[in-house]
Image (cartoon, rainbow, N blue to C red; front, side, top):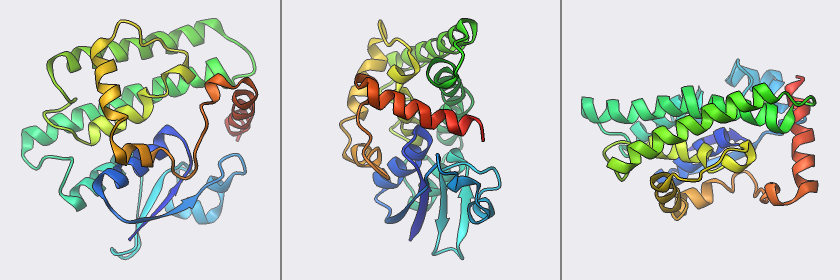
Length: 227
């Protein structure tokens, strides 16, 4: 059995969506980020970096794994799915997984900070991260023009990128003129495991269309920027 320590963020959803898609049984331990649950001694014993998500494999001597890419690879290897075993196939998946971890995630995360959360609006910073995110979206679109999935077949690389790209509106980044990315996003959102995974640990309403909810979400995020 897997224990999943998580919150309703794109990184948290990478773990829950992977678990759901692989059909692995798991327990959810919600982490209240605005209350600082991730900074407690108990949590830091699982992840010294104080970030979600973390999984603990109770069937493997309570083995703890942090960092979403490492979590996804571990789960895929345990299940024998969504990650090829041949050298080239595995490498293709890992390349697009690292693309998300080194590019899409950090750039969208910084776009969120300066566009939504930072108390002072800095146009140069906002532009920098939104433009770079858009460039990365264009990279995905070009790849998806030639392939149904990011690697040869559906994999953890698709899950990782989707969990972030689907939140493009919150980052203030346009999807216009990217038909192949749109096609892929529409296919991904139909997958039952992904639909379930983004409800973990709780359903988040579409705050982008609700100004009051958006401001409340942003206020909570600002608290975390200061800790």
